Image (cartoon, rainbow, N blue to C red; front, side):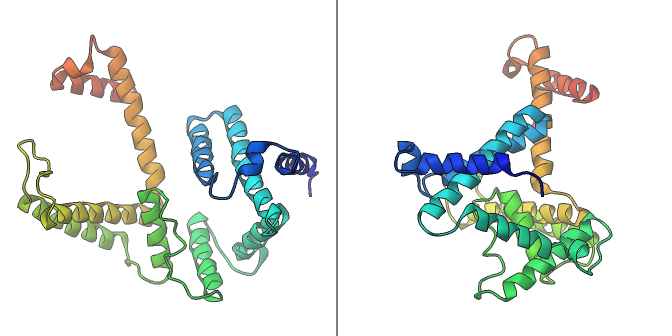
Length: 273
């Protein structure tokens, strides 16, 4: 074990902030009052990772750790648990879910490790109070992340396509249903679903569109890809290319004819942006 001086000092600092003679703001916080901070700091850390800013990542990881330690101190003040309990539990979980390292199981690659992880997780749930398989997937997750987590859990329970070709068949089926639903719904002159009609037909188009996205997430899962990360990368690529177009355009892009916009887009693409 390495020296924990830095970690212990940080825990003591947070305890001092929460003490009766500490910081009024820190003393007032509850689990709920700072819950959104956990999400915000995690996203900022992800942003630093994606742009390759290691120095900023170090800072953002500290902010994530702050949320963990502060939430743990709030719990300790209320007699619920301590930061040591948190560390003990996650250490035990990591050992338990890596039987290919700490036990006799075998996993030859990263995909096999994920399958093994899901199997051990299901075994853990079997000994707890009865709950639905998907109850552990937070509804606050981004939709693509939810879809991938839900699909992984269902697949671990045996509800799975045999091959990726079977998933592509499902995608084609859902695409057909979306096209049929869209053809039947009232539309504005620009082709968008009419907002004047909030009936079942409109909801059906939205539902079928969601089914197409869900099916594509499963294609990615079968390929060993992360749908959320893939779409984030595509959004970042679009940002880079659009920034190039804005810099290269003479005047406002919105005033430029679409063929010229497309030419700038292809130029950005040719430069590897």
